[in-house]
Length: 64
Image (cartoon, rainbow, N blue to C red; front, top):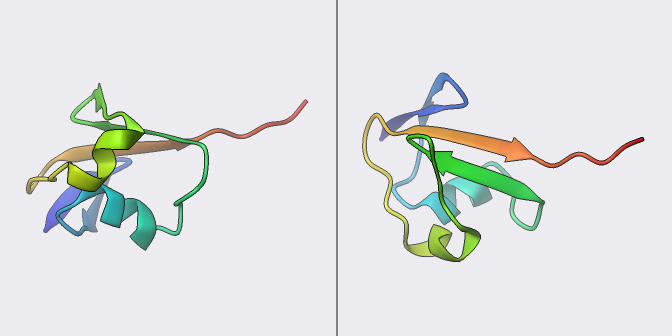
């Protein structure tokens, strides 16, 4: 199923948690928004993506 991932077309699985796993981002400090709405981490395993959804994933990066 094609979605927009961080502004680019991407072939994604239908479940948000599976997308995070596919991207090898599980266990990392992330914020995920679907169609500009933040999806809390506990909802990822049951959150169903739809074709043409706009998914933005932001990773927290520490530094100083």
